[in-house]
Image (cartoon, rainbow, N blue to C red; front, top):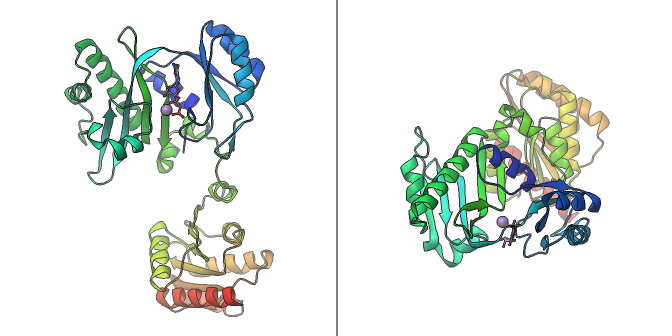
Length: 382
Ligand code: GDP
Ligand code: MN
């Protein structure tokens, strides 16, 4: 889950990161009111899920409330890299000497949270990694002890903050970023830029937070502020039905129970020369409504030329799933060929139930994948 900048800054402020004052607006009148309250130069920033808003014209400075109202009007409603701007953040504008970068990310290779920092802030870190990789500092946090204070200070020195007061303030911010990352179950907490003001103090101007969807149940307050407006409609629908769905570019739809089995199914489809159209984990308890929703989601993709159903009946019984499929097919009419591989608890009964249906039975996953690849090819050339 992505947080908007205005949400991320509220969250980081609670952890003690110095954020600028201001508020979020969805009309020009509100922009004016917030700018008037700030009573000084402001920056008006598009709140959409894209990076590099500055360069794309989504971040503008204004000296007076009137000017803020004007630029607010330009940014609100504008199309930024394909997304319409519905909200802007109006924040106190800061003058500064230098831009720095700091973030906490999960490093899969070392299985640790790693702090990343650079004296080359303001630009996207991927850009720095490409053009000046030596300017990026990485500091892994200890898996049990977390990020230690001396490590936070080491990062400060490594990016050239040698003044002791500044290094101390930077260390406090780095520790806050780390704490926010851990406590919110984030996958990224980034401040870019973190700026050095004219008086030498540090100030965060922009922040980005990504949260781990799998841990969101522990944070109902954060889950409640989710903005799904930029997500594909099918993915929203899937989430509402408790189905894990990710759209891909191929033509073989996959309906599987279990994430691991879904991954294996995609591997085997690819092994036999096919391309999966999606990842779909229907989860446990595949009742009629769930199967129906899953089928509808898969079929809403016009590229789908065959569907491979791969169910392992453990706690969920195969006959239950078979009944779900039959009931769903009474409501979802399709001539897309469906291949089913059903094994596990009550598989005999499940197969018997499906014998009269249009589903093509498969004895093994390999058999099912090959049949799906053939069916998709035949349909593509028909
Ligand atoms: P991004 O382009 O989407 O990452 O948006 P940012 O919030 O990082 O803004 C881009 C750039 O706008 C920053 O790198 C700054 O150069 C500038 N900017 C943002 N806020 C302020 C501010 O308060 N004062 C000044 N002078 N510049 C700002
Ligand atoms: Mn930025």
